[in-house]
Amino acid sequence: MDPTLYHQLIGSLIYLVNTRPDFCFVANTLSQYQGEPRIVLFTVANNVLSYLHGTMDNELDYVRGDGFDLVGYTYSDWVGNVVDPNRTFNFCLNLGSVYVS
Image 1 (tube, one colour):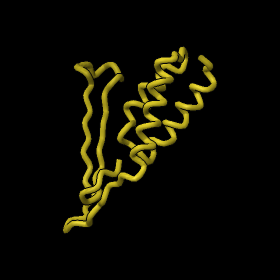
Image 2 (cartoon, one colour):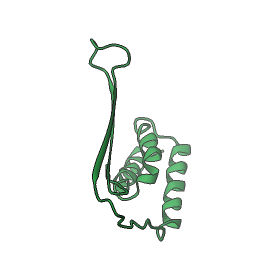
Image 3 (cartoon, one colour):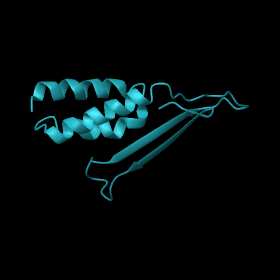
């Protein structure tokens, strides 16, 4: 397995996550194996590209509703230990009915 080809393929997938967040988990999982790429992972990445090619014409329609408020939600957890700085933090921002970040 040529690692350079796998790195280029994963880099392309990560770049596409900006416009297609529906496969962010897959791109992230595949990127974790860049140190030791295998043929099976390369095959999976090619299957993801086939999926993307088949769904290029799919789109989401965002309809403006009555409310156009910016609403944010956060979650943090110190994992039971406030002394240790390792923690979990997540957030979500919605602008009207649209997920922004």
